[in-house]
Length: 593
Image (cartoon, rainbow, N blue to C red; front, side, top):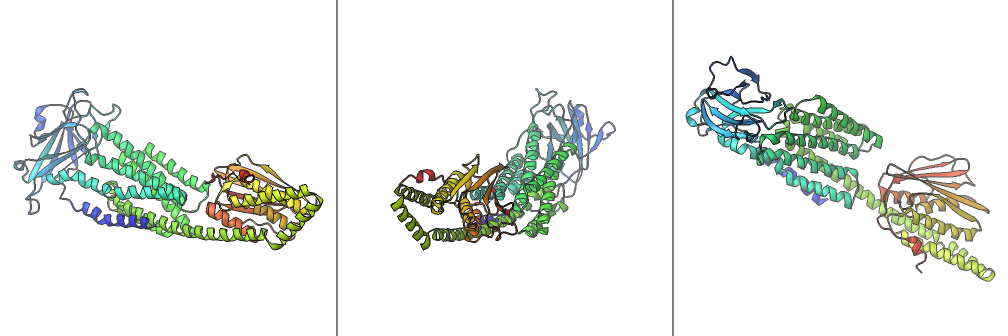
């Protein structure tokens, strides 16, 4: 628990650093439009006075040309003030292609080698910053000319991303590291959170929300690495589309895991959870098929997840589930920066707002874990106390006295029967000693314990008890003493006098859920006039023991339905299908002495 709060504090201490990384940059000088001519002449390096032959476009990408083309962008540089007098201007170009850059006709940089075909072209890096000579940075209109080729893109790709601006050259040099610092600052804490949640899931509370939260953190961490790749490890422009596809795939996975976390954090049925996840997947498929642009699609899939998570929080709020209002408030704060700038949200605000939401999610998980830990301790104490009560009930003085009296009579009349009875009684005690201290045993061992008890009761009451079993997976786990308690309740609450008494058990496995249908004949039904359908079978210490054992082993994921019908008592036990932690072969224990 202390580790969890340490992680939260660590994340919170990173917020000032993230804010500092988002300090106000120098003024960006941009242009709303640019000009293109699909021809290759040296004079196009000079500012074109007559642009009637040039095509005019707005800055929302560029049309890819199979041949070399020229692009001209006009920038209006302002008069330098005291703040800008000390820095030199630099031109920044991000485009899918190799290019030569000219500022007012003077070459200021090359990015790769421009070629007439794929073999002669050497791809340039995706982002390029170039120093503008101070002699060409006076106030007024200037022209940036780009000689461009894009032969390393897919033949089916008709449009590519394109962006250009002018600002302080030193800021442009530092810009990739500043952009990468936002996600990388929290990457260490995020990795720690992911490992911690995974550790909690496998060692303490096997709650799906912890496992999903860990997977979500690992996915966000991968997304951070892929996003930071552009700034920290510059790559050639032909890798831009594959990287964006990876980003989009991780965004879709994050969206699904984000929704799954809220679906499993709140108490919902399996159908409801699958329904919410199905809605996310369908919305993602629609987005991928009908929306253009990788950034647009990545943003929309995140908004889909936020919408579904908000719906789940509202559902939890209506049903008065714990932490629903807190989670809803966190989601609203997470999405609030979109109102500032929807297009800059993924680059500038996402990782900052997600770090705050991550702290909130971790806090609610910690609180839930704390409550479940208290419930588990209480359940274990209750289980231990009731286990002692059951043992005391089986070792009551009148039981010992009746047993000794029966043994004495059998020794005189039928020594062989006395030996069989003593062996059967010893087997039952061995079975109980081998299983009662365990949290889970196999169904096979529990059945062996019940059969041993029925053999003892058969000798004591002169009734032939039988236990009919229909179970194909007897290696499945069950809390010890559950079926034995049901049999004891059936015998103690019914007036079985003579003849044959048959109990039956049917095992049903469906969707990782195990159901055990126990049936017992009813001789006296006046104490059970009304069937019960809740998690309490109202049969004294035995029922409390069953409830405590099931809660200790399966949390709140179990159910008991009890009904009396047609002179038969039916119990339906339902709990998750798991394997026992420790296999103790009680059938061998029965012959160990």
